[in-house]
Length: 331
Ligand SMILES: [Fe+2]
Ligand SMILES: [Fe+2]
Image (cartoon, rainbow, N blue to C red; front, side, top):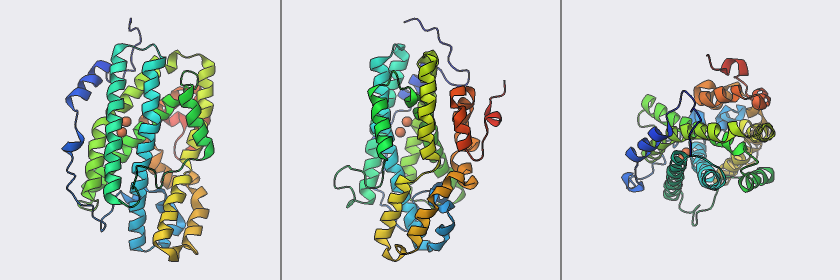
């Protein structure tokens, strides 16, 4: 196939990405699985967890806040597993199957698929180590989707050539994944020993692949999305708005983490947990929460891409600390 597309200036070529995938490959056994999980430590940087931005969070005592942090860290692992195997791997298989793309892109996609399957195994292994009773089989304990989200995912994966929103989802969530890893590493640098080493190790290994995945997703933009008819892009814009509306104001999994906290601390079930549940809609407007999760510092490349595509203009009101004009790339 004649490669005529000029890749975006600021990302590495597919050839380079494939060389790096080969060079930086690692195996699950490279991790130290003999580490014991420390229940006295945090399992995630505290500012990553959405509930810590709600007024009633202060009503939890130190032990309860730490346990919430641990439950949240497990929910993040479950979210990664869902996104990487139940969504990304299927979407990437459609790139190879349904689109006319160059050999280098097929190779890159195959690397990504293999790596995401490995990541999923790594996260399951960590979950099982932390809470063996929750995972007698590899089923989600905390992660939940609404029926609408389930339907949207099913449709997207069934008609990937028409419903191109999966490309935007891949771009945004892979950059978000990279930012989660960065937050772990940054927190550990500033607070040595505060986070459990098993969690740090897993996110450190994850980071080794995710920056490259995010670049590959942008090649998909060039090879698939930018060549699609306008109606497909407009439809993708509308669908992506629905996805982001749910994500910028998280509810489902946050509720499940609260339920788990309630099972472990029944005294919270009368007042504090109902108060936190009532306050969940505040997250959609919380500037502090948005600064952590949806700012240039966290997902700057995705925001710069969103600013380039008029069909995504509808997203900007969802972001509390960012505007389109602030995110247009300087020429
Ligand atoms: Fe991953
Ligand atoms: Fe990835």
